[in-house]
Length: 412
Image (cartoon, rainbow, N blue to C red; front, side, top):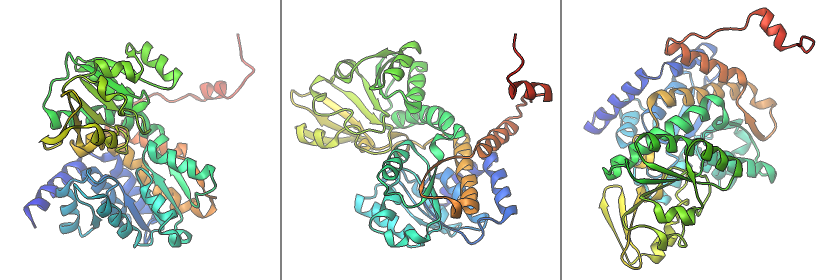
């Protein structure tokens, strides 16, 4: 075993020990045998928690191939351990070129998967375009993240989506915890690893007040920052205001910012029109799925010089001499520069993924193409397993209470 693989094996072991919910779902799947012989192609951030998911599905009887869903989010030690120690088919490494990234996705699809587990919908898009000959054999898929769900819904609206896909992202046991607490914590893991800069006392701009933005803003506030929110949604802007945050358009917020973090799922959030407004030394980071929220094309066009000043920090010298520091090439800062979401968070998210893989194996043949919610029974089971793992007990409705809630006749 290489030294790299040995380090990755320890990381996998640590993650597995802290994922009791997934352990219970894994045993359910093994007992049922529903995944025995099922070919599963996965494109997820290839790090320790993902490795535990992939190995869990294999232990349940599936044949698994794994690639990353982002060129910078692979933990090379984990990829090495999955290959050398566990014999898993893995096609991922950190700092892949775009060409290498898509070559890896093609290798996953060479498995001719029955089920697809995706994050960002690149694998599903490839399946519907350059590898469409495989679609007839695909029973269905899961999608992990907001950006991917947006793309899949757009495909479905245009009648282009040809398989049923479960929207794992919007399961309550996923987005309420993964997007908020996971992104909130791991974004700062990435920022602090990349910069080693203080957050307290700084003006910290969060673009987008969805669940990810809420989590980032809460953590920034807890670290002592002056938090400013930018939004396009009036309801979310009001919510941010009533949560105690300042709300400004980006054109005004950019003038004040020491940090700008985007978490919108949309492109061109920070562009050439904002660069002249920035402070010298501003830090720009992205917590959305794709590297187009902060326009790198605009940065490259307007910058007078560029150099890498730390492993994950590129310094752009703007006209007039001001410097902007882009983290992790504008890619997901929490995974490109950090270790991703906490293990206990991904225990819930990947339990949803595993349970939904089993659900699809049972039901996909009866589903028409489209985007489907996670069944409430899966959400509820994962929640109860998590409470059990935390040794937390909750009340249950009495028969009288249940009858009351299901009736309409009893009033004042």
